[in-house]
Image 1 (cartoon, rainbow, N blue to C red):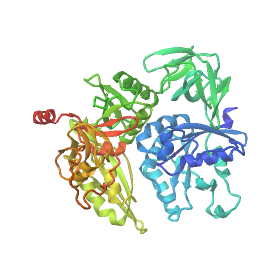
Image 2: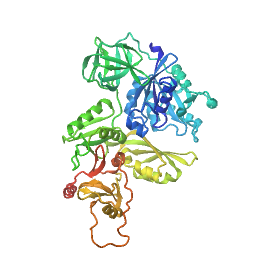
Image 3: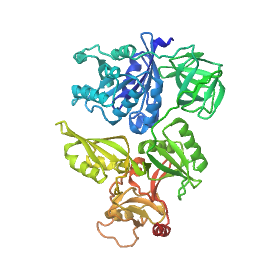
Image 4: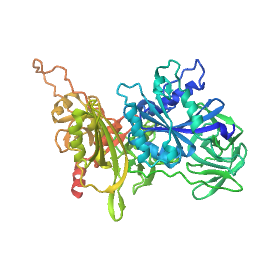
Length: 606
C-alpha cells in the first residue's frame, strides 16, 4: 500500500477518559471482527492486570481499513507513571486523537500527553467523549481545551483542530451536537476526519532505510521482535541490514516481517516507508536502536524519556517462610527478570547495591513499580521490597526534590480535611474550582514524598467518592520535614498459627491485618498499633483449658474483619525499617530486622 493511503495516529488522554473503549468501537465498525465473533470489552487491554484495574499499562498497536486507507492506531496509557510508553510511541505517528471527558475536562495527564504530542509537531483531532453524562459541560470543556493548547504554546496550525463529540461506549460520534439524536449515527466521522486531517507519512520507499525501534515483542517461532515505523526506505525478508545501537553497529538478516491487520500480526515479504512493521532476526535488539542499510547506516536520535523520580530496593526473601509459596527465589533469577524488564520499559532504571542479594530499581512513580512487583509475583517470584523513596537532585548547589501537581475532585464536605492534610504534607494550593454541583476541584503543588502514603488516607477522608490525579512538576528546593506514619506496628513475638482468642484480646490495641488461622513468624507485622510506638504481641496464645465453665463466656469469639493489605496499601503504609514480603500467594509486612533484641541494638546504633 502506498504511503499516501496510510495514516498513523495515536490515541492519547488522561486515565479513564475512554481511549481503549473508542478503539474497540473503531475495530468493530471497520469490519475487523466477523459478524458472529465474540469480542471482549477493551480488547486492546490484553494483560490480566490491565483488565483487572481498568487501565492501559502498555502501549499497543492495531490497524483498521477504511475507504481504501490503512489507519495504524496506537493505544497509549493514560496514567502519569507510564508516561515513558507515551513518549516513545509518539515517534511512530503523524497525528494524535486527544480524548477529553465531557465532565472532567482536561486533567494533569491530558496536559502531559498533549505537551508531548505538540512538541513532536503532530496534528491533533480533539474528541469530547462521554457527552451523555448527566453532569456533562461540553462548551466549558471545549473552552478549557482551547486554553490548554494556548497555555502549551501550540502553533497556529495545531490550534486549528477539528472537534468531534462522542459516546465511545455506545459507538457513535458526531461533528455537530445537533446530530446526536440521529438514529443512524456511528463512528464514521472519526474515520473520515483521520483520513482528511492527519497527514500521510513523508518517507520515500527509494530512500536510505531508517526504522526507529519503539517497542519490543516476542514470537515463539522466530524469537525477539522489533516494532517500529519505516521512516524511510523499504525493508524485505532476507535483507541484511544494520542495527545502530548506542555504542556500535551490528549486522543482521531479516528472518521474517509482519504488519498489523486489526489485532493480528500478518506475515509479509516487504514493508515500505510510512507503515508500521515488526521485524524478526536479532535477539539483542533494544528500544531506541535504529535499523538502517548496511551501505549507509544512518542512526536516528534515540528515544529520550523523562527521568525516574522514585526508587525501591528489591531483595531476596530471607524470612522464615522463604521458598514455601514461590518457585523463583534466587538473586540471580530476580536480577535476570529486572534486566529483562529494562528491555521493554524505557522509563525504568536498575542499579546494583553493595549487597549481592539487593537491587535498586528506579521508576516514574509508585504505581509503575507496584505493577512490576505484581507481574513478578504472578510469575512465581518471591522477594522483599522496601518503602519507595524519592530521588533528590542538586541544582545550582541546592538540594532539590521532585514536585507533583495534584488535582483532587472531591465532595464539598471533604474540602477542609483534604486542605489540612495537604498543608501538613507541604502542599500549596494553586487553584480551586466550585462548579456548584456539590463537588469541588482543588489543585495543589506538593512534594512527591508528601504523597507517598496519602492515597488510601484520601479515599477514607472522602468516603471513597474522591478522585486524585497527579503528574510530575519538576524539581524545587527541599520543603523541609514531612511527618510519616503516626501509628506504630503490632509485631508478632513468635512463630505459629494465629488464634482467634489471642486476636480478640489484641483488638483494643489496634487494627488487625490478619485473621485467625494464619501462619505468622517472629518480626512479622500483624496489625497497626493504636499508639505511636511499636508493640510486640503474642498472636498464637490459646485459652487455657479448665474443667470449669461459666455461662456465656465460652460462646464463639467474633473478630472484627481484618484490613486487607494490598501491595499498594503496603507500599504506602510501611516505614523505612520495615519491608514487604511478596510471594505468589501472600503479601506480608515485616520488620527489616526480625529479632527484637537485634532490632533494639540497631536502633541504638542509628
